[in-house]
Every structure is written in C-alpha cells, then in structure tokens.
Image 1 (cartoon, rainbow, N blue to C red):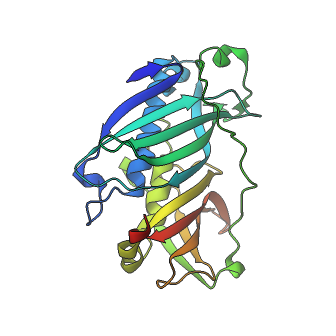
Image 2: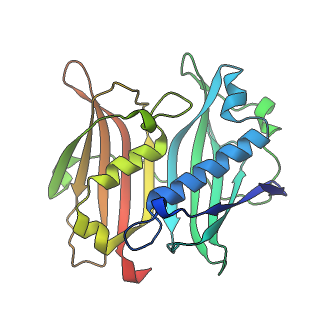
Length: 266
C-alpha cells in the first residue's frame, strides 16, 4: 500500500471466484476491495481494529453509498484509492474510488460512515483529537452528507419475497459479528437468476442498524417496486434483513436500496 498526501493506494487482483458466469466482477468484489483498503489504511495509521481492540474499542460501519460506473472483466487488476475525512457529526467518513488499471477509467466510488464504539458496552465514542490527529491530511474532501435513509415499507411494493438465512462461521469477522459485506451477499443471493443474468447494480445505499451474531435467526425481505420489470432498462429494489426475536417480533438489522441497469448499458 502506497500513501500519498493522505490518500492510500493499493492494487487488487480480481480473482476468478469474484466474478459472475460472464467473467464480470460481482458487487461483493467491489465492496470487499473497498473494505480491505480501508482496513489496511486504518491499520497503517495505528487505528485499525486490532489496535483499537487493545483499548476495548472497535470500528463499525453504519452506512455506505456506492455508485458503479463500469464493471471490471476478469482477468484484471483494480487500483483502489481510499482516504479518511474530518469527522462529520458522530461519524468518521471515508471515501473510496476504484479504477481500471489498464484504461484508468473510474469503476466505482463510495462514501462510508464509520463509528468508533466501546467493544464491551457498544456505546458510541464521540470523535475527539486523540484519533483526529492520526487520520492523516487529505486534500480530497467529498461531502459526506446523505439523504435521509428510507424504510422498508412492504405495502409500497407490488411483490415482497421472504427467505430464511442461516449464519455460517465464515460470515463472521474479527468483531465476532456478521461482516457488513455478507448482508449484501444475502440480499443478492435471493434474487432470481434471470434478473442477475440481465442486470447489474449501478447504485447501492446500505444502512447497518444493528449487529447480528452467530446464533441469531434471520430473515431476508426483498421488495419489488412498481418500476420492476425485466423489460425495463433500470429499476430499484428494496432489501431488509431482520432478526426474529424470542417473542416472534422482527428487529431490522440492515436496510438497502439497489438500482439495477441492463448489462449492455454500462
């Protein structure tokens, strides 16, 4: 990893396991690169998860928005840039961009809002100078403000599908909870094959509301709006991951909207 003027740069190999049947990168591949680059950079700055763990603190993601402009085709490598920004309210914003190593075209860009929490009480730690001084100075500052998060409202969709989720060992990470990219994998894995054959995401807005742990019983909901049709050039889907409590009530853990475009439109 190279760090220049507060921006960390790393070249990622697109593995064959990270592409779809058409040799095109999966959405999770872009998210994994974004997350890996952020984690490596934070560790280099001395504020990675292993270092924060020594202080009984840790990083958690609360929301990510990603725009996808082009999809990488295997075999290739992707140049990823990531940079932390000044604290925004309670959040530590971090930007990320991915470029084609060969054409240098912008593939995707994202903004993620991170929190530092107490790893024992889960209490949010307000930003202070003890970490602000470690973030590094980057002249690249992208507005971290995001529109108000939507809610999953079943009656607004013409079709709602429900699927059970079983948490596997490899779904958890160093925070001992379900990794944030896994929620995205669950959402996409429930979609019909014809949709995935014909369309790819162009935008993702995903919010992480609560953590999920090993033995939690989970459900995944997908809402298909009025604009959904396999004849349309573009449409938006709505996703909700919930935990089923002991009393039968459902607690929302993760909500997302994804916009999909026909493959040939990228």
